[in-house]
Image (cartoon, rainbow, N blue to C red; front, side):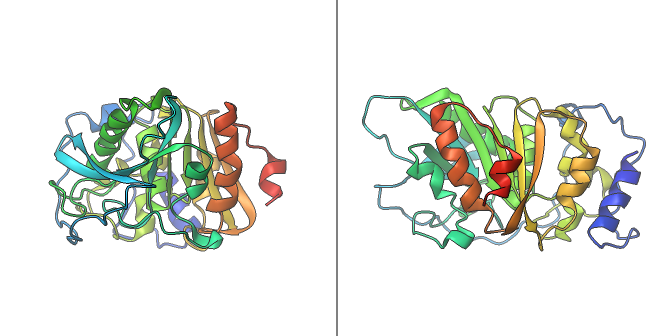
Length: 306
């Protein structure tokens, strides 16, 4: 079954089905959870990625640079400072795209067509956390590419939930591109988030063509455990997956996952008139006030209206 799904994915994205980034082993149990599949598995890292040095230092007004404890040690993160109003606020862990193991400037205003900082959440009054992950910046550990990073994001969420100005029952998770892929994987491993927003993820890591991947690309099990497509049945929190209809980057991902999705908790949305980058701002501007009001309602009319 899974071999057939990966062949569908490869065809959908224009890849050769005999690509060495081939399908996971078809003997895998389709109803095994991702947590169960990861249990006892040890990834083998074959390259470590580039060292980008320490993260940029924010001025402390919009974000503070902190360290959170992860399984590999203390990792850097940016976080919104205490508003000082004595209230507990909704919060979101946001995973940036590209090499999301590293963090950098997320406070300088960006063009609406490509605001990967998802600043609409912060502007609406939400607490935001941007966690770096293992091997990024000057962090301990090695980049694993969508594997151990799942544990880092969960550890960052623990840190966020324990802040006195954060409502631990209103923590959301989101990310864009590679961050969207990682957000899906985290959501397939944990039910602790109020909702999850994945912008522009891939269905299978074969679509990255080896980029952002540090394991043996010929090991089918390694690829399977990093591909959201195969673990959709594990999601237990509302998950919203968005991509611009003018996809460009990962053509086929939304279609393949939507077609194979067995889980009513996951919604897939293609947003007309937008691409992989411009889709972020209008959707986050619509989601943020809904979160602050306590109810999320994504509809076709909403998506068609941007």
